[in-house]
Length: 192
View 1 (tube, one colour):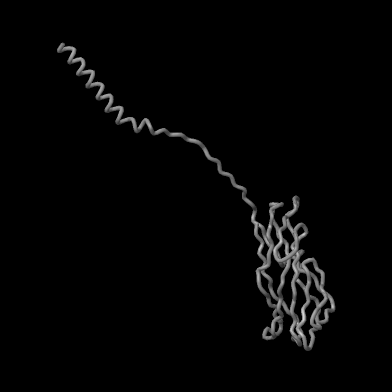
View 2 (cartoon, rainbow, N blue to C red; view 1 turned 135 degrees about the horizontal axis):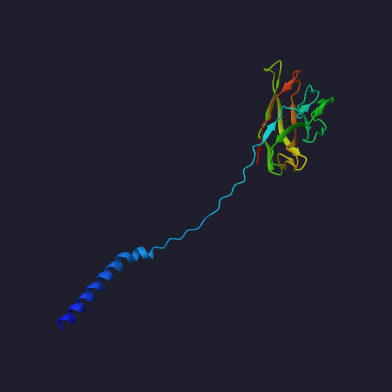
Protein backbone atom coordinates (compact mmCIF):
# COMPACT_ATOMS: atom_id res chain seq x y z
CA UNK A 1 0.00 0.00 0.00
CA UNK A 2 2.86 2.28 0.71
CA UNK A 3 4.28 1.48 -2.65
CA UNK A 4 0.98 2.19 -4.28
CA UNK A 5 0.79 5.51 -2.49
CA UNK A 6 4.29 6.28 -3.67
CA UNK A 7 3.35 5.40 -7.26
CA UNK A 8 0.20 7.52 -7.00
CA UNK A 9 2.23 10.38 -5.51
CA UNK A 10 4.78 10.08 -8.35
CA UNK A 11 2.02 10.02 -10.96
CA UNK A 12 0.40 12.99 -9.31
CA UNK A 13 3.73 14.84 -9.28
CA UNK A 14 4.33 14.09 -12.97
CA UNK A 15 0.79 15.13 -13.77
CA UNK A 16 1.20 18.46 -11.96
CA UNK A 17 4.56 19.06 -13.66
CA UNK A 18 2.99 18.34 -17.03
CA UNK A 19 0.05 20.63 -16.24
CA UNK A 20 2.43 23.45 -15.19
CA UNK A 21 4.50 22.99 -18.36
CA UNK A 22 1.37 22.91 -20.46
CA UNK A 23 0.14 26.13 -18.83
CA UNK A 24 3.51 27.77 -19.45
CA UNK A 25 3.63 26.76 -23.11
CA UNK A 26 -0.09 27.13 -23.86
CA UNK A 27 0.16 30.85 -24.82
CA UNK A 28 3.02 30.02 -27.18
CA UNK A 29 0.97 27.25 -28.74
CA UNK A 30 -2.06 29.52 -29.09
CA UNK A 31 -0.07 32.07 -31.11
CA UNK A 32 -0.30 30.98 -34.67
CA UNK A 33 1.67 32.68 -37.47
CA UNK A 34 0.36 32.91 -41.00
CA UNK A 35 2.08 34.61 -43.87
CA UNK A 36 0.80 35.76 -47.19
CA UNK A 37 2.19 38.01 -49.88
CA UNK A 38 0.76 41.30 -51.04
CA UNK A 39 1.36 42.83 -54.45
CA UNK A 40 2.59 46.28 -55.45
CA UNK A 41 2.27 47.74 -58.93
CA UNK A 42 3.28 50.99 -60.58
CA UNK A 43 2.79 52.70 -63.91
CA UNK A 44 5.56 55.22 -64.37
CA UNK A 45 4.86 57.92 -66.94
CA UNK A 46 7.48 59.81 -68.87
CA UNK A 47 7.61 63.49 -68.05
CA UNK A 48 6.05 65.75 -70.64
CA UNK A 49 7.37 69.05 -71.93
CA UNK A 50 5.59 72.22 -72.97
CA UNK A 51 7.14 74.31 -75.71
CA UNK A 52 5.86 77.80 -76.38
CA UNK A 53 8.78 79.18 -78.37
CA UNK A 54 10.24 76.36 -80.47
CA UNK A 55 9.57 75.16 -84.01
CA UNK A 56 5.88 74.73 -84.78
CA UNK A 57 4.73 77.10 -82.03
CA UNK A 58 3.18 80.53 -82.57
CA UNK A 59 2.46 83.48 -80.32
CA UNK A 60 -1.11 84.71 -80.02
CA UNK A 61 -1.06 87.59 -82.51
CA UNK A 62 -3.77 90.26 -82.58
CA UNK A 63 -2.42 91.65 -85.87
CA UNK A 64 -2.74 95.35 -86.54
CA UNK A 65 -5.33 97.44 -84.66
CA UNK A 66 -6.21 101.14 -84.82
CA UNK A 67 -7.71 102.29 -81.49
CA UNK A 68 -10.74 104.54 -81.16
CA UNK A 69 -10.06 108.11 -80.05
CA UNK A 70 -12.98 108.04 -77.61
CA UNK A 71 -14.00 104.46 -76.67
CA UNK A 72 -12.37 101.42 -75.15
CA UNK A 73 -12.61 98.56 -77.63
CA UNK A 74 -11.85 94.85 -77.68
CA UNK A 75 -10.77 92.24 -80.18
CA UNK A 76 -11.25 88.51 -79.51
CA UNK A 77 -9.43 85.70 -81.26
CA UNK A 78 -10.73 82.21 -80.52
CA UNK A 79 -8.40 79.33 -79.71
CA UNK A 80 -8.92 77.96 -83.24
CA UNK A 81 -8.00 81.31 -84.85
CA UNK A 82 -11.40 82.85 -85.59
CA UNK A 83 -11.27 86.66 -85.36
CA UNK A 84 -14.44 88.09 -83.80
CA UNK A 85 -15.89 91.45 -84.87
CA UNK A 86 -14.03 94.22 -82.96
CA UNK A 87 -16.04 96.32 -80.49
CA UNK A 88 -15.81 99.89 -79.21
CA UNK A 89 -14.86 101.53 -82.47
CA UNK A 90 -11.43 99.93 -82.91
CA UNK A 91 -10.42 99.00 -86.45
CA UNK A 92 -8.82 95.63 -87.12
CA UNK A 93 -6.74 95.54 -90.29
CA UNK A 94 -5.53 91.93 -90.37
CA UNK A 95 -2.64 89.68 -89.47
CA UNK A 96 -4.17 87.92 -86.44
CA UNK A 97 -3.73 84.26 -85.51
CA UNK A 98 -4.34 82.01 -82.53
CA UNK A 99 -1.34 80.97 -80.48
CA UNK A 100 0.02 77.43 -80.44
CA UNK A 101 1.91 75.44 -77.80
CA UNK A 102 3.30 71.95 -78.28
CA UNK A 103 3.05 69.35 -75.49
CA UNK A 104 5.37 66.36 -75.95
CA UNK A 105 5.62 63.00 -74.19
CA UNK A 106 6.63 59.49 -75.16
CA UNK A 107 3.51 58.16 -73.37
CA UNK A 108 0.56 58.53 -75.77
CA UNK A 109 -3.09 58.39 -74.74
CA UNK A 110 -2.43 60.00 -71.36
CA UNK A 111 -5.22 62.44 -70.54
CA UNK A 112 -3.84 65.95 -70.12
CA UNK A 113 -5.65 68.89 -68.60
CA UNK A 114 -4.68 72.22 -70.19
CA UNK A 115 -5.62 75.46 -68.48
CA UNK A 116 -4.35 79.03 -68.57
CA UNK A 117 -3.58 80.48 -65.17
CA UNK A 118 -6.61 82.47 -64.04
CA UNK A 119 -6.63 86.22 -64.27
CA UNK A 120 -5.64 88.94 -66.63
CA UNK A 121 -2.41 89.56 -68.47
CA UNK A 122 -0.76 92.70 -69.72
CA UNK A 123 0.88 93.46 -73.03
CA UNK A 124 3.65 96.02 -72.55
CA UNK A 125 4.76 98.60 -75.13
CA UNK A 126 8.23 97.39 -76.17
CA UNK A 127 9.90 100.76 -76.80
CA UNK A 128 7.95 102.70 -74.15
CA UNK A 129 7.31 100.50 -71.07
CA UNK A 130 5.82 103.53 -69.27
CA UNK A 131 2.89 103.56 -71.72
CA UNK A 132 -0.38 102.12 -70.36
CA UNK A 133 -0.40 98.34 -70.90
CA UNK A 134 -3.03 96.55 -72.94
CA UNK A 135 -5.31 94.19 -71.00
CA UNK A 136 -5.49 90.55 -72.18
CA UNK A 137 -8.14 88.29 -70.60
CA UNK A 138 -10.57 85.42 -71.24
CA UNK A 139 -7.81 83.05 -72.37
CA UNK A 140 -9.21 79.88 -73.98
CA UNK A 141 -7.54 76.71 -75.24
CA UNK A 142 -8.33 73.95 -77.69
CA UNK A 143 -6.75 70.77 -78.98
CA UNK A 144 -7.53 68.49 -81.90
CA UNK A 145 -8.99 65.72 -79.73
CA UNK A 146 -10.49 67.68 -76.85
CA UNK A 147 -12.95 70.43 -76.21
CA UNK A 148 -12.45 74.17 -76.14
CA UNK A 149 -12.72 76.61 -73.26
CA UNK A 150 -10.84 77.81 -70.21
CA UNK A 151 -9.81 74.23 -69.37
CA UNK A 152 -9.68 71.38 -71.88
CA UNK A 153 -8.97 67.67 -71.65
CA UNK A 154 -6.84 66.22 -74.45
CA UNK A 155 -4.45 63.37 -75.11
CA UNK A 156 -1.43 62.67 -77.27
CA UNK A 157 -2.67 60.29 -80.00
CA UNK A 158 -1.21 56.77 -80.27
CA UNK A 159 1.82 56.71 -82.55
CA UNK A 160 2.61 60.37 -81.91
CA UNK A 161 4.76 62.08 -79.32
CA UNK A 162 3.27 65.58 -79.36
CA UNK A 163 0.00 67.48 -79.33
CA UNK A 164 -0.76 71.01 -80.58
CA UNK A 165 -2.63 73.23 -78.15
CA UNK A 166 -4.27 76.31 -79.68
CA UNK A 167 -5.04 79.34 -77.54
CA UNK A 168 -6.82 82.65 -77.93
CA UNK A 169 -8.12 85.53 -75.85
CA UNK A 170 -9.62 89.00 -75.74
CA UNK A 171 -7.49 92.13 -75.98
CA UNK A 172 -8.82 95.39 -74.60
CA UNK A 173 -7.53 98.61 -76.20
CA UNK A 174 -8.00 101.95 -74.44
CA UNK A 175 -8.82 105.13 -76.38
CA UNK A 176 -5.80 106.81 -77.96
CA UNK A 177 -3.49 103.97 -76.88
CA UNK A 178 0.11 104.87 -77.91
CA UNK A 179 1.16 103.27 -81.20
CA UNK A 180 3.88 100.62 -81.10
CA UNK A 181 4.61 96.92 -80.64
CA UNK A 182 3.19 95.30 -77.45
CA UNK A 183 4.15 91.90 -76.01
CA UNK A 184 3.38 89.87 -72.89
CA UNK A 185 3.37 86.34 -71.50
CA UNK A 186 0.52 83.95 -70.73
CA UNK A 187 0.98 81.17 -68.16
CA UNK A 188 -0.41 77.73 -68.99
CA UNK A 189 -0.71 74.73 -66.69
CA UNK A 190 -0.70 71.24 -68.16
CA UNK A 191 -1.27 68.31 -65.79
CA UNK A 192 -1.76 64.55 -66.12
